[in-house]
Image (cartoon, rainbow, N blue to C red; front, top):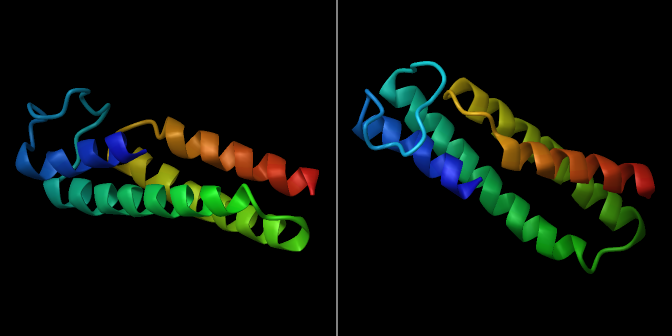
Length: 104
């Protein structure tokens, strides 16, 4: 997720995508790449922090943290799609959060 967020941000500095190691599957304006990249980076940070908290969480607190992970990873995945990337890291966090909610 951090890698894809950094790639989204590089769209600002290279609108044609020369700096991005993986080209996006559709072109977007540079400012959209910047905004979406910052959203993906922020969601990755939240998911990392909440993932560490989930290791020690139990019961209702675990379910609430998993719900937060699902919401934030969904937002990150959509932002990644808008900027032209697939958002697999956010998708994995989303599926894991859904599994934790269902398990609890």
